Image (cartoon, rainbow, N blue to C red; front, side, top):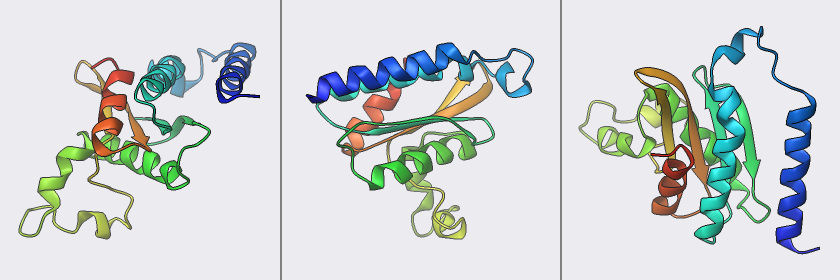
Length: 161
């Protein structure tokens, strides 16, 4: 079976699971529209990653840094699983793109050693982007597997920015 067929079958199975177990509107976490949009965000990220010919891991978190969804393309690097989460965690925790943290964590800057102080849960690498609805933080996306430009481009494309 070729990679495209496996990818399509996986997406079909995931979609069937999501349709079979619809989101309960009375569950408190589901008042966040990101729970409804996560699947579309991941699909857009996968499309962009395929266009760029790179295998990535995509993680979508809610505003409390809980995982809504993680998707791993077949040939993504093993370390990308953890890095996608850390990029998303950084974006939601700092309410900023993870790449924008880099200049603030350099020696002499006010957040120097922040990454180490938080047991390396925070990273200053491209690919983590917060997701806002107006001024309200809904959550974030983290993408890992390509180079810094690709990860950032995929994340921004996925959330339509």
